[in-house]
Every structure is written in C-alpha cells, then in structure tokens.
Image 1 (cartoon, rainbow, N blue to C red):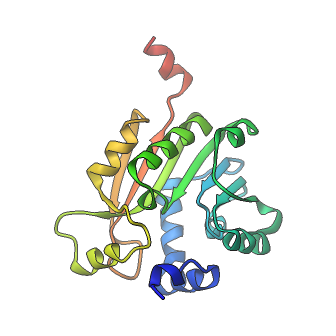
Image 2 (image 1 turned 90 degrees about the horizontal axis):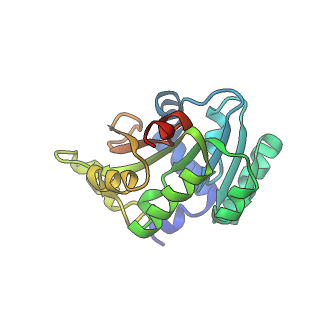
Amino acid sequence: MKLRNILAHAGVYEAFQRLVGAERERRLYVERYVRPQVGDRVLDVGCGPADILDSLPSVTYVGFDMSLEYIQSARRRFGSRGEFEVGTVNQAMIGKHNGFDLVLANGVLHHLPDEDATALFTLAKAALKPGGRLVTFDGCYVESQSSIARFLLKKDRGEHVRDKESYLRLATGVFSDVTASVTDDLLRVPYTHLILECRRERLSDTSQTL
C-alpha cells in the first residue's frame, strides 16, 4: 500500500503528523499567519480531523472534509467546539452563514487542479466578510531547496504541488490583496511551505474604486 493511501486513515495520519512535528507546525502557522481573534467566525475547508482547533482561541468554527473518517474523528475529539460536516463547501452552505472572518484551506490547494483551485478561491471570497482573510498552507517547490524537501514534496499525496509563482497566479486571479510567505522552518524534517494570505476588500476600499 502506498504512503498516500495509508495516510488516508485518520489514526495513521495523526501519528505521522506527530512524528514530523506537526503540532509545532500548526502552532507557529497560527501565530504567524492565521492570527485569529477571540470570537472570530472560522471556516476550515478540508479540515481533516480538525487538529488546528487545538491552536485556536474561542472561535465559531465550521469544518468541512470529504472524509467521513476524519469528520468522525473531529466530532469525537472536539464535540461542541465546532460544526464538522462531511462534504464540500458550496454556495448553498455559504448562504446559511453571515460571513466568516477567516477561511482556512490548510494543505488543500496542492490536491486541486487549477480549475478547482480557482473555484476554491472564488467560494472563499464569497464566504468572507469584507476585510476577512483566506489563509492557505501548502508544500511548494522553490529554487535551491534541499533534495530531501523536494523528494518529500514529490511523494506528497497531492498531485498538484506548485511553485510560488503558480500558486500566486491562481490567488491573484480572484483576490487583489495577496501576501505570499515561503518558509522551511515549521517541521522537524526539511520541507518547504507556502502560505498565502488573501484579503477580501473592505467596503471602504471598494467605494474608493467606484
């Protein structure tokens, strides 16, 4: 059985995450880039077992994932701390909510072809309040990265690991305010991540362009 198939099981995935230092990774990622505030409304697209909740303050959390096993794991572990739904985010779901301060897509984009990635950016923008942010987190190819990091990226379950410019091209096709950060210090093993922060325009910003 391939590694990517083994990691589809929630228990194995969580054990692997502990092995490579994912708890520290999540904590630093949240502190540096997500920067949540108490009371924020958070939508987590592809939430997996919702491990990130351990690093979030008191927020209103809604997590979606295609894996029933991951969602069942999240429900057992976190209970009423969030809503955990099996399936994909769509316009109908967005219409049931009053808007989110944060949309997270952690390790999602590198699983999606360009067309689906663009659809995710578009849905995220529609789900955000004015001034809200989409934050994404994915493996990334860069020049002169270590051979180990490149090897691990090639073995990733996602089949659409990109370079920085390719991720940015997708993001800026939907959002006008995008910040990209490349880092290689989040895991115990050599690995390169790209974090995108995409902000929806505030109403005052939109009015100035009219």
